Length: 242
Image 1 (cartoon, one colour):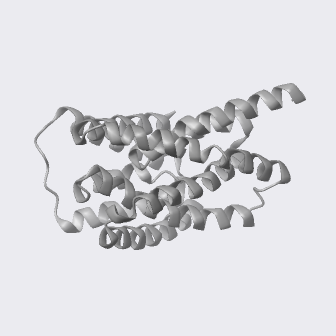
Image 2 (tube, one colour):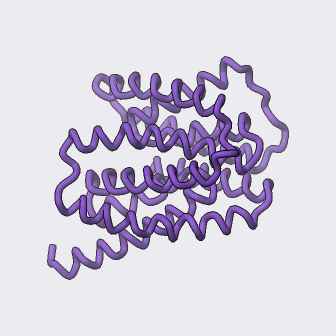
């Protein structure tokens, strides 16, 4: 790849990061998920995973600190523990099971839930046990595919009723999970000098994304917020299939 093409791809990647980070700040999820497909094509799979995750840590930590008073600490603790337990199971399953079929099942399930939320107003009341199981499954999926956020949101939109509480609580959870993933990426050797440089550059764009995302978040009401969340859920399912 020529030097000019590499530079162009890196500039495009930074633009993708800014846009996806704005979405992450606005809703509390989906930033990395939306950025990953284009980022993998622009700078490579492992490089994209490393840079996006590292930038996410700074982004979600900033959101969590700014919105500390809205964090549901009880839910944040419960979700984090269940997700971590599930991630351990997911990492193990990834080593012993074919993943293609499982990923497609997960993707179609997310699409089904998002369409139901958008077009069917009757709420399905699930037991506490099933809701806990959903979070645990989100951890398993996250351990296998680093894409458990979509399943977690299915639980979060029920447990966290207010848009500020939703965003702040998820920000804390992602800060913890992304930090764990960051150490794993270092151990796997993803952080070459080029990746560290790109990470540093994208870090400077985080604060721009936070400013824009916060302004958009303040302007939308609860119903609009939920509609955006459900649309992002639907897009996440499509991206998983593709």
